[in-house]
Length: 193
Image (cartoon, rainbow, N blue to C red; front, side):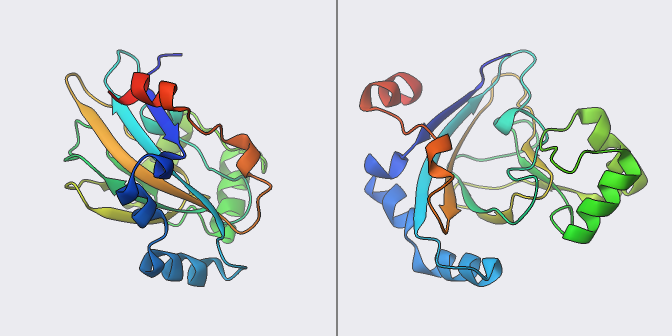
């Protein structure tokens, strides 16, 4: 696999601004209202640097769902200008809805526990409905609130481009946190300096 996606989970420990973003009450209120579950008390910031490497699949390693079933909300902030060459966030419209998950799984033969998808899988959906593909271009400071149970990716980056983002991960219980390795100060320096 081509390494083009560098992550710093726990970035709030190294940046007061990232900590403020993580604990922004306005964002939390919106996402907690959407989740309609217990407060999102377990959370962390992922600082990401995604750069061009030949054959890169983009941020997140290509098309995927963060959960095969159930909501998974995130807030993503661009820290650099993001155009079609620098790996914009892409999402398949309404692919987070239970009814559409069931329809797509049956129509395209996806497994109900599947969370990784090939480009050709997603092309079938887009060819059927070209307006289903949402590509989010933006400027530094632009914010995306998203349910990443839906099909999404960071589009592959083209030559001489780098994308920087902060992404907040939220949980209302701590059972998922063990999956994320928090970055050490030494690893942070290697990835981001």
